[in-house]
Image 1 (cartoon, rainbow, N blue to C red):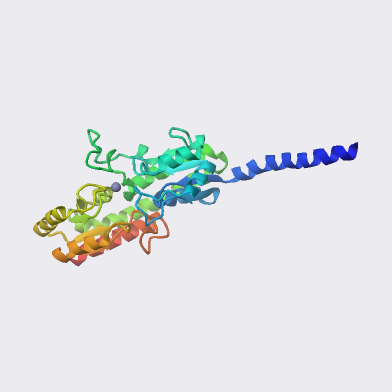
Image 2: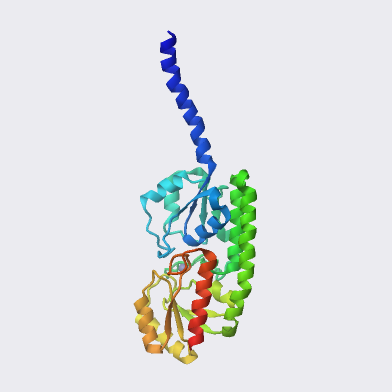
Length: 310
Ligand SMILES: [Zn+2]
């Protein structure tokens, strides 16, 4: 009788033990998903070794049009925290994945759902919503993280979210936050100084993703190869851009890795401009892989260099 009892209860007790252990193991590190690599790099600065981090978009992918893989649903299903840009940046691909992941912790409004745009002063917010011309910036310009001041706001928000979810690592996250913001403050002075000689100069961008960078560093990045965000360049629009570039002596065109560089090159050939490869994401261009601060170093240096050459 005892033997039978042992055979029955032992496997059960092992199962119970495993069941008790495994959530403990899962909880050892906060499981974090970031929609884009810039948000992921800031999450890594804050969470460090205390989080398991997954990034959905590749650094060379257009954040408006990310290739939604089925594996993303699994990642979202297991996550404790989702960090997204918001302001409709990911509206074309993330909400459907989130629905399918059936993870109530990440539902919009839940503590595990961090929509970073909420703490940021958005620019170009339209007074009336109008998508009739295919505008993908209908909630305002969502590319705010190329301004280091916004990176500090987002870092604070991410630290708050990690603290709310995992009290044990909160002190470490707060210390990392201080380290990151101190480093940004020190770098900011250097970046401002480097771009100061070019104050007021105009730059052409393919897509309107450089507004906040321009505002922060005193550059006018307000002429675009796209007639509207998300609408591919047309010959008539490009002819207008070329005329303006010649009239205003604009000599630099910046292009993100997922956009058509040849279009920029053909405009450059007609205007004598330089094409500069830029990226909003660590890893989008060679030399930016190491994180947010190296990314800004690259942007400031390459843009200053191009402006200085002319
Ligand atoms: Zn955009």
